[in-house]
Image 1 (cartoon, rainbow, N blue to C red):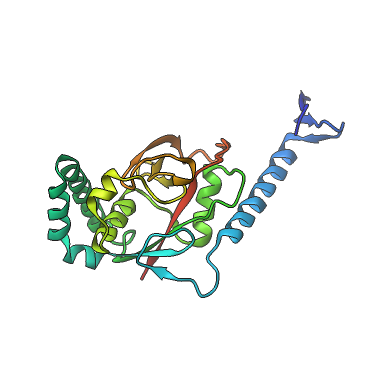
Image 2 (cartoon, one colour):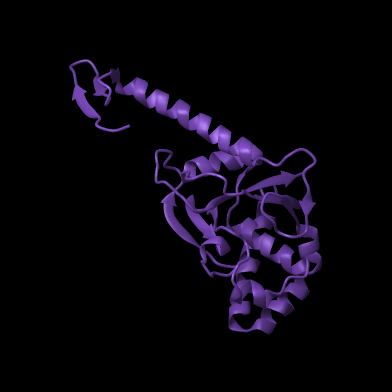
Length: 232
């Protein structure tokens, strides 16, 4: 919408559109929210797993990846050993794992013993972070946080991936994943092979956007949401 001017009357505020039509600001916001919901639903449907979905032991775009916390617990000593072998960066990663595991143990309803995660295929031009959150709710229980990301990494180690590769080698996944940190801010997880962003899979940092702000309409052209669902 272009060339919009705002005129305030004694009763209510109106906007004049570029085609000369006038409508109340309330009606305009209502139409915008309706169109936004339609767009979110369209994106979620286009990216939603198809019938006969696959649960994989290898992290892939468009497929559910299973995290088994029982397996992680059984391999705790092995995960520790592999982290420590890498050196100081491996020690830091292990401390991160310990913190996340403790949080998960204290919140069993959120972090069930079985969790599945889903990376969306980037099949849109742009979207917003609130829309990404709605897409995650459409396919599962919402957007992943940093605890689930650390559980994912530990599960990948249990499945045979190298701690050294996870810390130092470029992520092979095509896009950076958007997550919802526990402090309600956005986070960025992993790297982006499609865009030549050579960050490793363990990369996790604060995006600086408060997810409580539902009116944040910054356009995101390159990242994808990262969803999870509990398996009871």
